[in-house]
Image 1 (tube, rainbow, N blue to C red):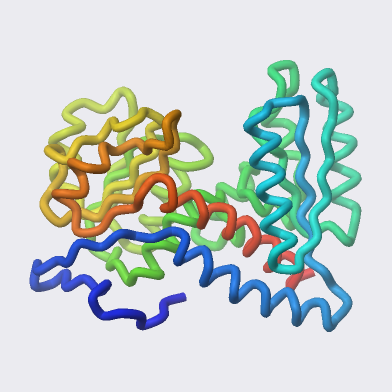
Image 2: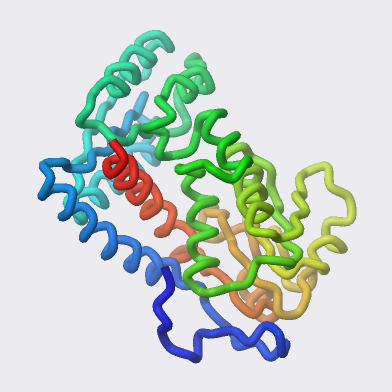
Length: 294
């Protein structure tokens, strides 16, 4: 989904003559949503309105904010959204019943269970109960498996956002060494699989990795998904590396030390305004695709 927009944003990789590029997630998100609005309008002509159902269990203020943001994003492109807010004492069985109702509702095309749920709920069981056809957030083990095998339709949304940014800015992947710092099931592992499927050579690092700085110094592409503020330093990076920061920590800072990494990187995502806006747009995109295919 690339516009051949301003040449000053293009990166001359082969000549190793790189221009500093801010990977603007707001710009990518805007392009995605403009395309989706047209697709939603076409679906409405066929009497189909893409609908995302969000489920929030309990009263976590951050989760409430995220759910509201997703609902507002749906409205802006003409989609419908259903907000289901269940009390803190909801049981696993009650949550599964609600998910099953949504699975069977033909007007619902995507289901998102807001993480985290209260500790007494079996979150994995709840995720697994979401129909693969409506798993637009990529949380089921079947969805992850399909993503790893290269035919998944709905990868987890943050990994999907990272890949969308890479494609938008025409950053080469094939043959490049990508280092992913983090191995969570909804971020580090799936983005490693997506990069591998696009012919990168992928190293996945984690809390038990030794010589992390040495590994990062070899990376053409760095994905930061460790959940620690300002963790990755510019001194650790190879000159001209592409840095995609998927972290979002208290104080609006990412997982990389932006100022020092900016000096070494050829391209870098800001926090905020990088991966985050595209993540929500990918949730919308997956829901529209689900509506198109039903």
